[in-house]
View 1 (spheres, one colour):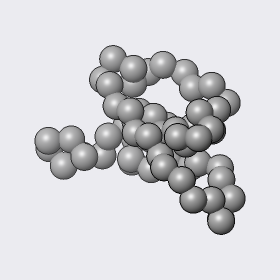
View 2: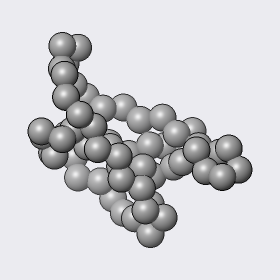
View 3: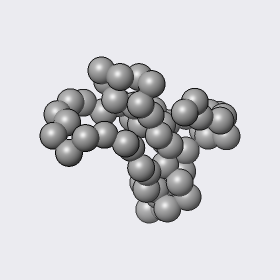
Length: 58
């Protein structure tokens, strides 16, 4: 959340072990990250206002 309690759009979320599996939050702050239900690992969250509009690799 930003200082004004609004969701952060454009946060990049990456699986720590598989950098090719990544997603970006939408205007509501939600994201969809494809992974299996039994996956156990860490997620890396990156937010930089300047990176907000960069296209994602899929």
